[in-house]
Every structure is written in structure tokens, then in C-alpha cells.
Length: 188
Image (tube, rainbow, N blue to C red; front, top):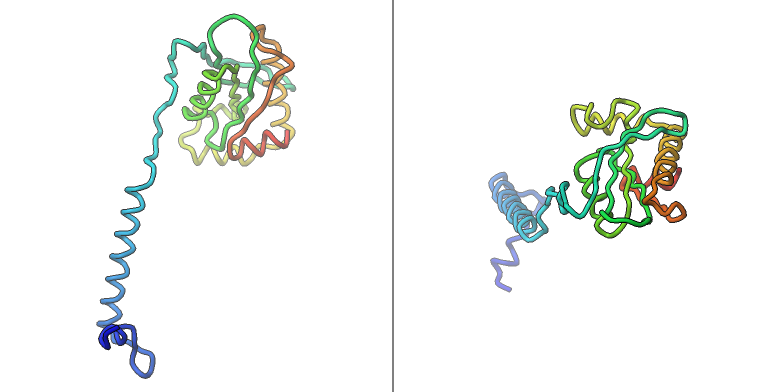
């Protein structure tokens, strides 16, 4: 190693570096971090917000429905299932804190393409439903105020709704949740 390279990281006897050196080293470090971040972003997976299953997929029957919660409140939901006769297993999908979003509906359609009847209840229906909120943050705030008793009633209503459908195997119903919905699914 050359003497110049060995001395490159040395500082003065008192441990201080000049202002000019500090600015130069900071600029090099900042540029290196920016280049590294750009490279990592370029090599990483691209975010995709597009539907993976077309909402109008000809192999599915999809609709917005209303059902009664265990206490009689009207709850909105998205239901999707494969076309055809016969009873199928069902899945209740509890949404994340974005509520009944296009993404969660797409998750439902993906499960329907795999052969399941899917219901995605809008768990902020009592507050006007997902569409009544101006943005995701407002929906998340409303969700944070939901209590376990109300969630249990609404999810029980969803369960009763799917059990009552002639295309559902009433003894084969599961539940899956995402993020906040995973917690709700496991607690209720």
C-alpha cells in the first residue's frame, strides 16, 4: 500500500480534518450512497398495481352484495366465484387497513380462479363504506377505531351469508386476512 493511500484516512494530530476535506469526503460519500440506492432500485422488482385477474373475467361471477351482520347491520361485500354448477369451498378475505380496495378484490378473484367462492366484507360499512372516505389515511383511521365485538358480528354475518349460498360447501369455509385483516381474522 502506498504511503499516500495509508495517509488518506489519517487526520491531523488533534483528530480534526479541515472543512474542505470534510466537504469533499461528504460529497463522495453522498454520491456513493445515491448511486448505490439507484442501482438497488433498478435491480429490484418493479411494483405492480395492476390487476392480475380482470374484474370482468369471463370464467368468474363477481358482484357487490349486502348481507346482515349478526346484529342486523347492513354490510357491503365483494363476492366472486368460478362459473359453473356445484358447491365449492369458500374463503372469507379480511382486508388490510386500506379496506375494500381494488387490490383486495383482485386477491379475491385470484382465489376464485383457484376454485373458491370468496367474500370480501367491507368492514367499514358501518361508517359509510370504503368509497365514502377521501383517501387511504382516512380509511385507516376509521379501521383503527373498530372494536372486536363489532368485527366479530360483521365477520359472523359474512360467514352466515356464504353458508346460505347454494354454491358453497358449508362445511369447508376458511378465512384469510392481510396485515390488519390478518389480526382481525385470527382474533375473531
